[in-house]
Length: 77
Image (tube, rainbow, N blue to C red; front, side, top):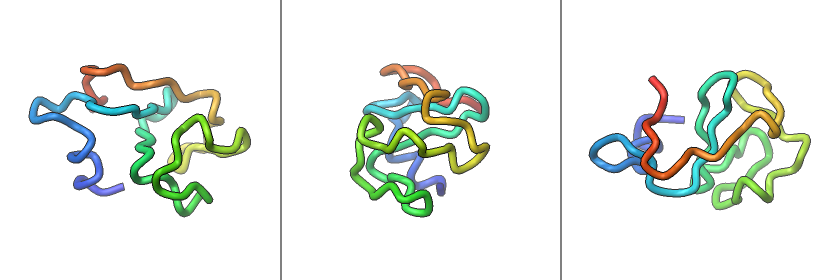
């Protein structure tokens, strides 16, 4: 995921502005607009519609290890 994708998900202050999900083990942020094409998840797929056996593309954590990124919550890092 490039910086452009992250930038489109944030306000100028670096806060989340739409329904994003964060991998608690590694901090990867799932953006439904980007999807995970390499993992079989098409762009535009809401997190809730991802198959239960999908795994984080960075660390391999289970879908259940993700939590919603709260509106206004700072991105990690």
